[in-house]
Image 1 (cartoon, each protein chain N blue to C red):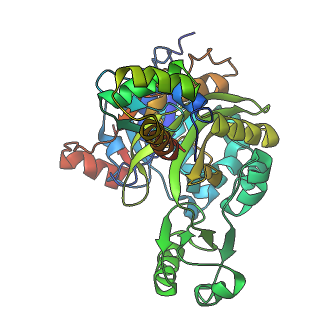
Image 2: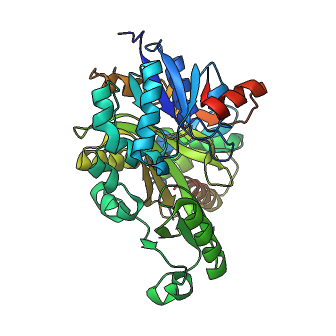
Image 3: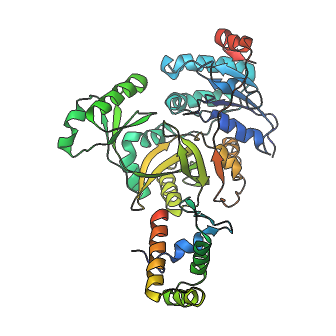
Length: 84
Length: 351
């Protein structure tokens, strides 16, 4: 499973739009995500440490840490697979 | 420097929507280049090629004899056109005509017609049956490929570790995915009838197609690379839509290839990225691709650069390749008075 650290370069290269449209200039893949998805991708571009990301998100969202970590890992894996 | 007085002859003015020739796109690039104010004449093998009638991209259109009619016949016709048009630069755009034109290149030079083409040896090295060697030079994988001359192969190949689906390809054009021996035999017969022998069989790899178009300067340098991912394909597997990308692996692999064989002229490198992210070399086309107008779309006008190279001038520095620029191909009709069609059929010219 791809981790945030493994995928750091991938996140940094993504072009993110307010509309939720995401374009990867290397693979040419494009897709859309919802508001939370864009927020997460912006966060991934700024912070690479998973614990730091969890801390920031737990301040905003009422979620269980285990559940949040699982959701983040699922999101990262899906993105990594999509963009090869 | 503006090349005001140049006459450029371009082939490949065919534009069937599912598999257009590159000629019209090359002409469109030149027409829109700030450096080019010359005139373009179109050369074709079929009076129904629409480029011959599109005056904005082709001032005069001529019919050529098919390359299979022999070098002498081809040269005689080209000489007659040259006497009338005084061709300065000739840009052939079709694979099948290139062997003949490369052979005739010294004669064309003597006639005052400049080209910017690979040598016969460079052309041979990028043949589809040489791809494995080339992929090693590029440092990427190549799907297994084998030239065959008998369709019995398809009923026996599983003994030699081939599996279905596989791809049946012509030496110059066409690629058909076959899922069983019967489909493969039909594809073999169709391709052999149209393009002759050998027919090539290639291992099928599933993935996404990425292409690079560039110029080799003949000294080992790659000029003006434009890379794109195919976003939609025609039934013939040609790009219907694409988007520019910045793919360093594809750039390096293509750069390695050009350096290794000191490629001279335009080329297109086709690779397929499989599910594990590995690159597989599919083809190297010794000409501009039909999607070359995208190079003008990202301000890296490769046909305009070819004109400079053919004139022994330095192409200008390119801007950085911008990813995220798309093209979407569309079909439209050109209205043609029957008299123009008649003139091409009877006299081989539309002026």
